[in-house]
Length: 283
Image 1 (tube, one colour):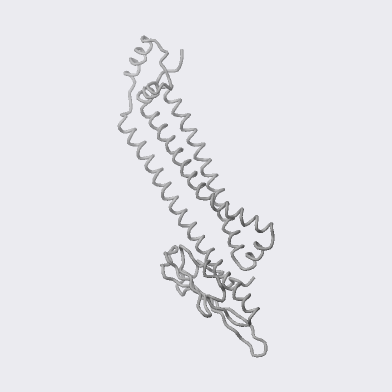
Image 2 (cartoon, rainbow, N blue to C red):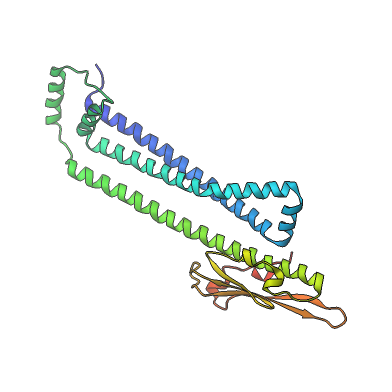
């Protein structure tokens, strides 16, 4: 004699819940790997965005190949993020199916039979005897079980959405800070190279870095002797319209030297985002 219908339903629901847990665990591991890969890619692109990195990418085959690999990996990151969302949705769907199967086994088994995933094999007498025994057994109201299951599912979905939103904010903030450092270092390296050739400070046209100043986080501007980055959007607790700048100056009479003045916002909520900005371009 096989398993009773209700026991079969609960067994299948337990198996579905186990599959959901496996997918959820895999999603969390993959999320950590994607985060690490994203940080590594951004670090590599930042390295090749400054003056020495661009020179290396132009003149060395290994660096050129590595930069191309980084760009390819950067293009795959959004696909990986979508795959993570799909895994999370599938895991939540498995949990929902399992909760429904555990809370409403009769209806669940009928749905499986209607979908031709299972078929009846017990005799009519066995079914009637089972139903008689079930009628004598006290039951928990299905309505309350379904409500609890729904609350659990809603909590999982809400917490997952909050977690994803916080993750996106943190990633955007880290990307914005890395970009700010990279653009500032690009200006400093370009200014050093121009000064080495002409002994003068270069402006926007002389440095020829206008094409690299487009960004979704900052408005960048190069004047006769200054580089200014003004935030377009709020960065954490730092409001939009906040400015970071690098000023270029000359000193000396017989031997003229170039030096830079790096300025961070006076607001501590903004300056703490870039504690190492004073060292940008020193290496």
